[in-house]
Amino acid sequence: MTPPSHDGLSRRRLFTLSGGAVLASGLLGVGATAAARTTGESTPVPSTGTHLVTLGTAAGPAIRGPRIGISTAIVVDGHLYLVDCGLGMVRQAAAAGLTMDRLRALFLTHLHSDHTSELPGLLLYNWGPGVNGIVDPVRIVGPGPARLPSGAEVHVPPPEAGTERFVRDLLQAYAYDINIRVYDEGRAPLDDLVRPEDIRLPQEVGADPDRNPCPEMEPFEVYADESVRVLATLVNHPPVFPAFAFRFESAGGSVVVSGDTTEHPNVVRLATGADVLVHEAIDPAFYRAQNLPAAQLEHILESHTDLQAVGRVARDAGVGHLVLSHLGGIQDDADAAPTRAVFGGPVTVAADGQVFAVGA
Image (cartoon, rainbow, N blue to C red; front, side, top):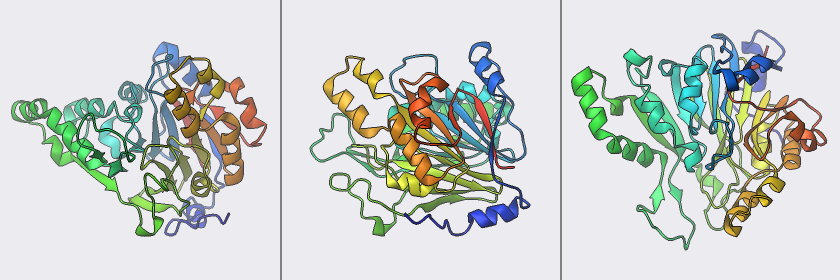
C-alpha cells in the first residue's frame, strides 16, 4: 500500500515547521493521571506544543465501570480540538483545565449515542464568557447525511440524519433555555456560535450504505486553520453509515483517531507514519461472557477491532505510538499482550484524562 501524500501539510513540511526537531511521541504524567481517577485531579495540559488527551476511554453505551465515555482532545499551542462527546466528558475536560473558550472545532466520528450524548452539556454548560465558555464560532464537523440500511424500520422520524440536522434539532430542543438566557443574561445567541457541517464524501469514492459502505479511498481534508489540518476517511462500522476516522496534522506532529471501526485498510492509509494512533479495541471473550442478545453480540464482533487486529493496523501503518481507547472488556496495560505480540512499538491502554506529548 502506497503511503498517503497528505498534500498541503506533508510530513516533510511538518518537520520544517517544527524547526527540524525529531517527531516522536512521549507521555506526560502517567502516574498522576492514573491517580486522578480516584482523586478528581488531572494532569495539566501544557499551553505550547501538540498534546493528546484521552478525556474518556469507555466503549458504550452501556455503563460497565468508572471510565468516562469516549472523547479525545488534541491541543495545539493552547487551541482545543475535540473528537466525540461521550458521557461525562464535560466534567473531565473541566478537570483537565480545557475550557471551551479555547475550542476551535468538534469532530464527530459517527452518530451513535455513546459518541454524541454529552454534546448538550458541552454547549449549554460552556457557553459565554461568564463560564469560560464558547465566545467565538465553533465548527462541529461530522457525518451527514447518515442513512439507515434498506429495510430498517423508522420508529422515530426522520429516516435520515446528519450533523447539521442533529445540532439544529438539539438547539430547538433547548430553545426555551437558550432564548431566556440570551434575554435575561445578555449572552450571545448560541445558534450564532455553533456552526455544524456535514462531511460530504468526494464523488469518486462511490460509497453506498447497503452495497459498499466503506470502499478503500484516499484521505481528504475536512478542516484547516493556522494550527492544524484535519483529514478524514471512511471506516467500517456496520451498519452505521457514514463513520469516520480523523488525522490531525500540526507543526508538532500527527495524531490519528480511529473512531469505531473494524480492522480496515482505510485506517492504515490514514495513519501511515503518524506519531500517535488512538484506536478502539475490544476483547471479544468479554462480550461473549455477557449473555447479550444474539443481534447485539453479532454487531459488537463484526463492527469493532480485537486486540490482535489493532496491532496489525499499527504495524502496517508504521505509527510511533499506539494508544488503545474506546475500550470494550479491556481494563489495564496487561490486557494488551496480544497487541504487543503483533506490534513492536509502544502500546498504552489509555486511562481517562491521560496526557500524551506529541512531537519534540
